[in-house]
Length: 116
Image (cartoon, rainbow, N blue to C red; front, top):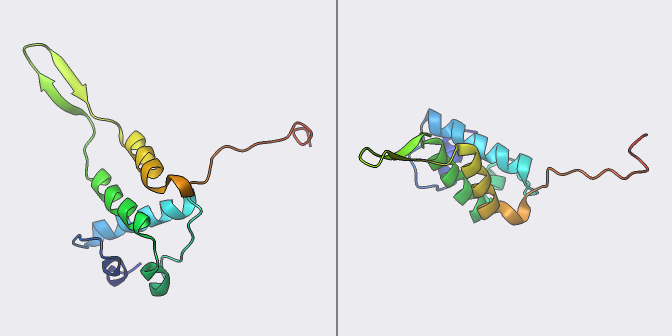
């Protein structure tokens, strides 16, 4: 994927080498985890990507910029709260934005075929 192709997605972000890698990774994840099909190297296909895929890519970019760990801390009450881990947030993003197109990781094997 080239910078020009990433810019053609109109994601509203500045494209640099790092964001280009993250955008390409997000598109690979969409192809691997959903039934949505497109060629990420084809200008024609990139122009036809659904809005929900573009939304996922922008949210994925935001997620990659979040640092995990302590979200807040109170000294007097000795209270701490922790942010969600990226894996949980990633799965929530997938489900919220691309849920209808997700491919299940669950595989069913019939009892007859189990021993063959």
